[in-house]
Image (cartoon, rainbow, N blue to C red; front, side):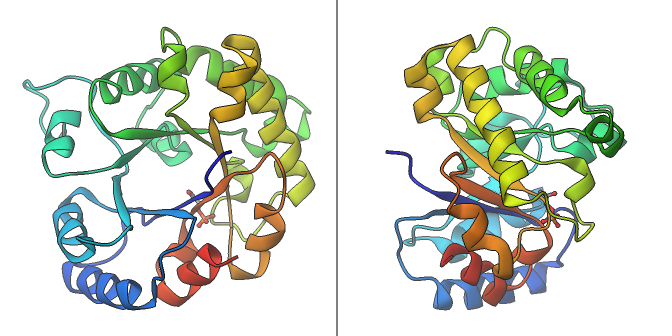
Length: 248
Ligand code: PGA
């Protein structure tokens, strides 16, 4: 049985005060559910969120990590540093990082290896851009991202991994992949894990859909058999909206 997992991705939003206000309000609204819940926030807010959410089921994630333990890498943060402050999850390979910060399948792979040396669970993002969808190459693109990104990752590690399918054309655009389009791609991702590892690994890996998820479409998406959760951008910035998605 795969446990549903809904994670918010705040991207580069919210001041310190806004973070505290959100966290207090969300903690009030939050009822313990069977749905795993996390908020992936900017590095500077992780400690604050950990403190406010202490004693609740609400987990905290980072949005990026460096693949070395330490060194002369100005501006970077290591997995060990994140682990030390109790971070539970870390997004890797988000399309915005691939697009604006030269993230590649190779750096995604190195980051996954590094995170698997810690207790932090990676949320690995894959997805095609609009031209690839229009050319009908989305399955090929995503399979290639998985093959390269997961090189050398072992089966027991895969069972702990979260994969987020995020068609780039549906992120922050208001366009959502139809539940059937999302279901089809999440099925392709699961079959790829079956082929690369084993049917048991495919069965246990958590696959999220991300791209303009909101309260109005969450239940339709979450009812798809291959979709175990959502990675929510814009709608995770409002406590009421995010809670409604978790309550799908
Ligand atoms: P969105 O973002 O929900 O605002 O489309 C999703 C994401 O980028 O993870």
